[in-house]
Image (cartoon, rainbow, N blue to C red):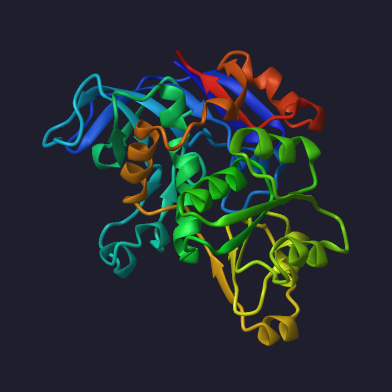
Length: 340
């Protein structure tokens, strides 16, 4: 079957690999219809992703169809369309038992720590499948992306009427904007790209948009928010410099949430952190409960990701097209790879 392998930074290969066997107890064999290209995939391609070992089959944003199920499986049935929760946790540690499976010390993410879904068929634990036959495969492939932003907003305890700043308007930043607005917050967005800021205005109706790189940004934010800096700052850039300076954009008593991941150390001004008595939060993936919640909101029409998909390719054409998706002039928001 067609399989895409990231052999090393900057080098994809299309290989032929055997199809998986029949599913064992608790497993499902699924056909992969859509794979979303994530920032993780881009960083891995560039050689900047922590936790990554080469070669690996990437792909963890998946829209799949159940082909067969093993013994004892009741979660899904043959023919179901599903989103995949790609986080393989142990299920027995303190974090898993407390409902924080995303922070399991032994967590393995398919497509990152282990081989993922950029192939025609895979075996997955049936409990990691979230069925919804009313959604399209494109939508199901984006559930995991949305879960990152959903969990980040949940971590912040953002309330209706609070002010929030999202730094970075890439796909993860867009997911944060989505759930911050669903909570009724007043949201501002900062990004270096005017095209992405325009996308936020046109897609979300966000009018409070600011270009990054300005030394006067804190003052501009105060003017926007009635003399105060934001009560919550989400950094979705994965950029160490941006993450280190995020505390300067936060108001006193605010929460700063690192949604993006940087492969290195971050420098923070400690007096500023203490003067404002900030709460600094990190996020990791998302817990299982976020997936059905997101799927329900998508089915109701509260979340519409159709405009997010700006680029598409078949698995055969993806390797040639991938470098072009990374160029600023491509204006890529989300690329989708089709295996059917």
